[in-house]
Image 1 (cartoon, helix red, strand yellow):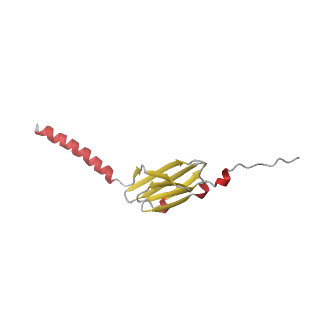
Image 2: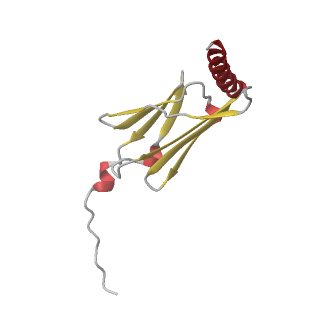
Image 3: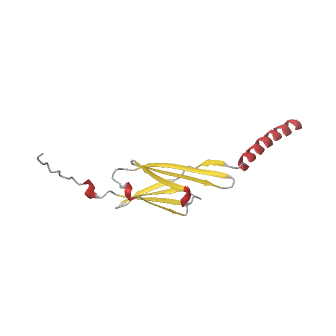
Length: 129
């Protein structure tokens, strides 16, 4: 009976040691699920994205069509962290006027409303050819 208990303990110990070896391995890769909040203002929309431990040079913000992609990579001596977030933005916002700021692990994207003059009805003169 004592030998059964010891063999179970050893099996657990081996499993536990393997787990510790994985935790201590270099170049671990962690994909982070980043928190995102947003709120509208009178002048546009503001997104706040949690990116703890990331610096400006670790992050890229790209715009394609009506989509904003936030990507980041951060390395430590024993780990590798990666984030990837995509936001689809309404056509009522001006993506050319986007502003991105990073402070204390919080990335803030401020996107202004399109100028209402752009949304006004325009009459086109019809000319004789």
